[in-house]
Length: 425
Ligand SMILES: [Zn+2]
Image (cartoon, rainbow, N blue to C red; front, side, top):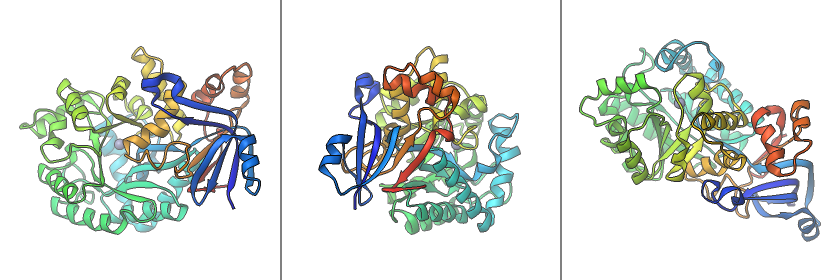
């Protein structure tokens, strides 16, 4: 029996960075018909109710039905150490991140955190994540197992590091290749799971390991590849010392076959002109992680790049300070303001849905509400707290009604999510 979800419905017919707010379609009394895990129709509630009298009704009142949020850059193993005080990137990795990642040698701990992380993510309205793991194959098995049992479409891969990390958190070029390949063959394409080739970043991979990742990517060209790029100025100086032969940070990847369509670079804040033009030419994806960039003090991402290449939005849990894509949209708004530009609410919600889907090359499957798309949906209460409710009372447009929830909303604003055509709760 089909399910018919009633509420306000927000979808996109174009890119709001090109077409402005007319790129969005808002149905004030709308409906989404779901059957067999997919969206089969959307439109005015009255029309769909009349056409599908047999459908099971889920009336969400004045709630907003949007595509599920897609968090395009996460470190799920950092769940328990989110909001750790007082460090910048390199100190932060050594002080907080690496000791915590060490614990994932224990498969039971990995499974516990994978479950906890996905519970938190879905409670915050996120239905798809693209996550790093640790060097331990058990950390990859844990997150894919947890996602598979929830029916989620997720992206993950073994985080490879063979230098500048403590004993117990280093693999080698060969073992990184072998283990990544084994995990890729085990998980890639199972149900809604995709393997992502994942060298952490150039400071923790030797050129030999980056070359091994490049070789693996050539063997499995339909996989994505994720890594970090130009997050902090100290980090860029370190990369310059480690790779004296490279033209710039991007070149450390480019020269090893790790730059092309399907490459996802987290942060990408302090880019040279050469790096920008090569990223655009190659059709790479950038992932903006605004709460992380302010929390660790990294810098202000240039959202103007969204006109030229695929830009996704992400929490960067636990370098980011929140599991919430609403908080993340708010932080993206604030960073753009600091660069002199006000992102429209349609652009913010687009980044968290279609934008991230495009970054993951998954925009034909997830990130929007249209017939044929997989039914991953987030139901937002636009009056979830007294402060938000009073701020929306005079709203004349959907954007005035939605913006206070973007700026002040959290998991209380998430009424529920639908994953693969099923309500989570
Ligand atoms: Zn990261």
